[in-house]
Amino acid sequence: MINLIIKDFKIIKKIIIFGVIYAFIIAFIGTKNVQEGILNQGFSMFYTIFMTYFSIVTANGYDEKNKANYCIRSLPISSGDIVISKYLAVAAYTIFYYSIFGIAILISNGVLSANSTAFDYKIFAVTLIISMLVFGIQYPFYFKYGAKFLQYFRTIGFLLIFIVPNILTKIIKSIDKEKVMRSIDWINNNQQLCIVILTVIAACITLVTIMCSIKVFDNKEII
Image 1 (spheres, rainbow, N blue to C red):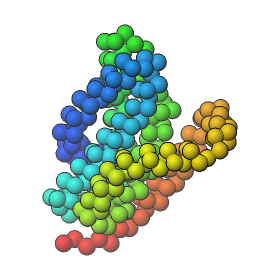
Image 2 (cartoon, helix red, strand yellow):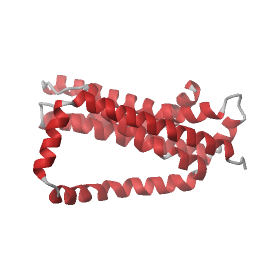
Image 3 (tube, one colour):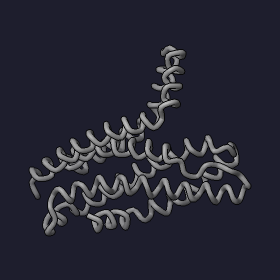
Image 4 (cartoon, rainbow, N blue to C red):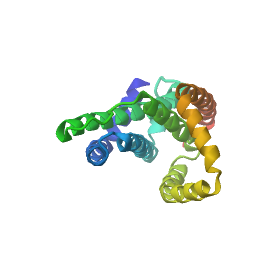
Protein backbone atom coordinates (compact mmCIF):
# COMPACT_ATOMS: atom_id res chain seq x y z
CA MET A 1 0.00 0.00 0.00
CA ILE A 2 2.88 2.37 0.77
CA ASN A 3 4.21 1.97 -2.79
CA LEU A 4 0.78 2.85 -4.22
CA ILE A 5 0.68 6.05 -2.15
CA ILE A 6 4.25 6.92 -3.23
CA LYS A 7 3.18 6.32 -6.83
CA ASP A 8 0.38 8.87 -6.44
CA PHE A 9 2.76 11.44 -4.96
CA LYS A 10 5.10 11.02 -7.95
CA ILE A 11 2.16 11.57 -10.31
CA ILE A 12 1.18 14.85 -8.63
CA LYS A 13 4.68 16.34 -8.33
CA LYS A 14 3.67 19.37 -10.46
CA ILE A 15 0.68 19.92 -8.18
CA ILE A 16 3.00 19.71 -5.18
CA ILE A 17 5.31 22.37 -6.64
CA PHE A 18 2.32 24.64 -7.23
CA GLY A 19 1.07 23.85 -3.71
CA VAL A 20 4.35 24.88 -2.07
CA ILE A 21 4.40 28.21 -3.93
CA TYR A 22 0.71 28.81 -3.19
CA ALA A 23 1.25 28.01 0.51
CA PHE A 24 3.93 30.68 0.88
CA ILE A 25 1.85 33.28 -0.96
CA ILE A 26 -1.25 32.93 1.22
CA ALA A 27 0.80 32.38 4.41
CA PHE A 28 2.56 35.70 3.87
CA ILE A 29 -0.73 37.41 3.06
CA GLY A 30 -2.37 36.04 6.22
CA THR A 31 0.61 36.79 8.46
CA LYS A 32 0.98 40.33 7.13
CA ASN A 33 -2.70 41.21 7.52
CA VAL A 34 -3.55 39.44 10.79
CA GLN A 35 -0.46 38.83 12.84
CA GLU A 36 -2.40 37.11 15.59
CA GLY A 37 -2.79 34.20 13.17
CA ILE A 38 -6.59 34.02 13.11
CA LEU A 39 -6.69 34.51 9.34
CA ASN A 40 -3.87 32.03 8.84
CA GLN A 41 -5.72 29.24 10.65
CA GLY A 42 -8.68 29.73 8.33
CA PHE A 43 -6.30 29.76 5.37
CA SER A 44 -4.61 26.56 6.58
CA MET A 45 -7.89 24.64 6.50
CA PHE A 46 -8.95 26.07 3.13
CA TYR A 47 -5.50 25.51 1.60
CA THR A 48 -5.18 21.94 2.83
CA ILE A 49 -8.62 20.85 1.62
CA PHE A 50 -8.19 22.74 -1.67
CA MET A 51 -4.82 21.13 -2.46
CA THR A 52 -6.00 17.69 -1.32
CA TYR A 53 -8.93 18.02 -3.74
CA PHE A 54 -6.69 18.81 -6.72
CA SER A 55 -4.19 16.09 -5.79
CA ILE A 56 -6.96 13.46 -5.69
CA VAL A 57 -8.46 14.61 -8.99
CA THR A 58 -5.04 14.65 -10.70
CA ALA A 59 -3.85 11.28 -9.39
CA ASN A 60 -7.14 9.49 -10.05
CA GLY A 61 -7.47 11.12 -13.47
CA TYR A 62 -4.02 9.87 -14.40
CA ASP A 63 -4.86 6.35 -13.22
CA GLU A 64 -8.09 6.35 -15.22
CA LYS A 65 -6.47 7.73 -18.37
CA ASN A 66 -3.65 5.19 -18.31
CA LYS A 67 -5.77 2.25 -17.10
CA ALA A 68 -3.51 2.04 -14.06
CA ASN A 69 -6.15 0.29 -11.93
CA TYR A 70 -6.25 -2.59 -14.39
CA CYS A 71 -2.47 -2.96 -14.23
CA ILE A 72 -2.51 -2.77 -10.43
CA ARG A 73 -5.15 -5.50 -10.25
CA SER A 74 -2.76 -7.85 -12.03
CA LEU A 75 -0.25 -7.45 -9.21
CA PRO A 76 -0.17 -9.77 -6.17
CA ILE A 77 -2.12 -7.33 -4.01
CA SER A 78 -5.66 -7.61 -2.73
CA SER A 79 -8.46 -5.33 -3.87
CA GLY A 80 -8.88 -4.28 -0.25
CA ASP A 81 -5.31 -3.01 -0.10
CA ILE A 82 -5.76 -1.12 -3.37
CA VAL A 83 -8.91 0.61 -2.13
CA ILE A 84 -7.54 1.34 1.34
CA SER A 85 -4.42 2.89 -0.23
CA LYS A 86 -6.67 5.49 -1.89
CA TYR A 87 -8.17 6.43 1.48
CA LEU A 88 -4.74 6.51 3.12
CA ALA A 89 -3.61 8.79 0.29
CA VAL A 90 -6.33 11.29 1.29
CA ALA A 91 -4.93 11.32 4.84
CA ALA A 92 -1.37 11.57 3.47
CA TYR A 93 -2.26 14.55 1.26
CA THR A 94 -3.95 16.27 4.20
CA ILE A 95 -0.98 15.75 6.53
CA PHE A 96 1.50 16.78 3.83
CA TYR A 97 -0.23 20.00 2.78
CA TYR A 98 -1.08 21.04 6.34
CA SER A 99 2.61 20.57 7.23
CA ILE A 100 3.73 22.57 4.18
CA PHE A 101 1.44 25.44 5.15
CA GLY A 102 2.66 25.30 8.75
CA ILE A 103 6.26 25.57 7.57
CA ALA A 104 5.27 28.50 5.33
CA ILE A 105 3.75 30.28 8.36
CA LEU A 106 6.90 29.68 10.43
CA ILE A 107 9.02 31.24 7.68
CA SER A 108 6.52 34.10 7.32
CA ASN A 109 6.78 34.70 11.06
CA GLY A 110 10.55 34.97 10.81
CA VAL A 111 10.50 37.32 7.83
CA LEU A 112 7.70 39.57 9.13
CA SER A 113 8.61 39.30 12.84
CA ALA A 114 5.14 37.96 13.57
CA ASN A 115 3.84 35.31 15.94
CA SER A 116 1.13 33.48 13.97
CA THR A 117 0.23 29.97 15.08
CA ALA A 118 1.80 27.56 12.60
CA PHE A 119 0.27 24.30 13.83
CA ASP A 120 -2.98 23.78 15.72
CA TYR A 121 -3.96 20.17 16.40
CA LYS A 122 -7.66 21.11 16.62
CA ILE A 123 -7.64 22.79 13.21
CA PHE A 124 -5.70 19.87 11.79
CA ALA A 125 -8.11 17.33 13.29
CA VAL A 126 -11.15 19.10 11.82
CA THR A 127 -9.39 19.47 8.45
CA LEU A 128 -8.54 15.76 8.36
CA ILE A 129 -12.11 14.81 9.30
CA ILE A 130 -13.54 17.01 6.54
CA SER A 131 -11.11 15.61 3.97
CA MET A 132 -11.89 11.99 4.85
CA LEU A 133 -15.64 12.64 4.75
CA VAL A 134 -15.79 14.73 1.58
CA PHE A 135 -13.25 12.82 -0.48
CA GLY A 136 -13.78 9.36 1.03
CA ILE A 137 -17.46 9.39 0.13
CA GLN A 138 -16.67 9.93 -3.55
CA TYR A 139 -14.56 6.77 -3.93
CA PRO A 140 -17.38 4.21 -4.34
CA PHE A 141 -18.64 6.35 -7.24
CA TYR A 142 -15.13 6.75 -8.64
CA PHE A 143 -14.49 3.01 -8.69
CA LYS A 144 -17.85 2.41 -10.35
CA TYR A 145 -17.97 5.22 -12.93
CA GLY A 146 -14.30 6.16 -13.33
CA ALA A 147 -13.49 9.10 -15.61
CA LYS A 148 -17.16 9.99 -16.07
CA PHE A 149 -17.57 10.56 -12.36
CA LEU A 150 -14.27 12.47 -12.16
CA GLN A 151 -15.60 14.91 -14.74
CA TYR A 152 -18.74 15.49 -12.68
CA PHE A 153 -16.68 15.71 -9.50
CA ARG A 154 -14.51 18.49 -10.97
CA THR A 155 -17.54 20.39 -12.24
CA ILE A 156 -19.40 20.10 -8.93
CA GLY A 157 -16.28 21.12 -7.02
CA PHE A 158 -15.87 24.33 -8.99
CA LEU A 159 -19.59 25.13 -8.79
CA LEU A 160 -19.57 24.71 -5.02
CA ILE A 161 -16.84 27.35 -4.74
CA PHE A 162 -19.35 29.91 -6.03
CA ILE A 163 -22.63 28.43 -4.75
CA VAL A 164 -21.76 27.58 -1.13
CA PRO A 165 -20.90 31.15 0.00
CA ASN A 166 -24.21 32.43 -1.40
CA ILE A 167 -26.18 29.63 0.30
CA LEU A 168 -24.40 30.17 3.61
CA THR A 169 -25.13 33.90 3.44
CA LYS A 170 -28.87 33.24 3.00
CA ILE A 171 -28.88 30.66 5.80
CA ILE A 172 -27.10 33.00 8.19
CA LYS A 173 -29.67 35.74 7.51
CA SER A 174 -32.60 33.41 8.20
CA ILE A 175 -31.44 31.72 11.42
CA ASP A 176 -31.86 32.77 15.02
CA LYS A 177 -28.54 34.43 15.83
CA GLU A 178 -28.96 33.97 19.59
CA LYS A 179 -29.31 30.20 19.20
CA VAL A 180 -26.28 30.14 16.91
CA MET A 181 -24.20 32.07 19.43
CA ARG A 182 -25.25 29.69 22.21
CA SER A 183 -24.26 26.75 20.02
CA ILE A 184 -20.92 28.36 19.22
CA ASP A 185 -20.29 28.99 22.90
CA TRP A 186 -21.07 25.35 23.71
CA ILE A 187 -18.71 24.17 20.96
CA ASN A 188 -15.95 26.50 22.17
CA ASN A 189 -16.38 25.18 25.72
CA ASN A 190 -16.37 21.54 24.57
CA GLN A 191 -13.91 21.55 21.69
CA GLN A 192 -12.24 18.25 22.51
CA LEU A 193 -15.60 16.48 22.95
CA CYS A 194 -16.79 17.84 19.59
CA ILE A 195 -13.62 16.61 17.88
CA VAL A 196 -14.06 13.15 19.43
CA ILE A 197 -17.70 12.99 18.28
CA LEU A 198 -16.78 14.13 14.76
CA THR A 199 -13.92 11.63 14.63
CA VAL A 200 -16.21 8.72 15.56
CA ILE A 201 -18.80 9.79 12.97
CA ALA A 202 -16.13 10.24 10.29
CA ALA A 203 -14.55 6.86 11.12
CA CYS A 204 -17.91 5.06 10.83
CA ILE A 205 -18.77 6.73 7.52
CA THR A 206 -15.28 6.09 6.15
CA LEU A 207 -15.47 2.42 7.13
CA VAL A 208 -18.80 2.05 5.31
CA THR A 209 -17.51 3.76 2.17
CA ILE A 210 -14.37 1.59 2.20
CA MET A 211 -16.51 -1.55 2.31
CA CYS A 212 -18.69 -0.18 -0.54
CA SER A 213 -15.60 0.72 -2.58
CA ILE A 214 -14.09 -2.75 -2.16
CA LYS A 215 -17.35 -4.38 -3.25
CA VAL A 216 -17.64 -2.12 -6.30
CA PHE A 217 -13.97 -2.61 -7.18
CA ASP A 218 -14.29 -6.41 -6.94
CA ASN A 219 -17.40 -6.47 -9.15
CA LYS A 220 -16.07 -4.11 -11.80
CA GLU A 221 -15.20 -5.83 -15.03
CA ILE A 222 -11.75 -5.34 -16.54
CA ILE A 223 -12.03 -4.12 -20.11
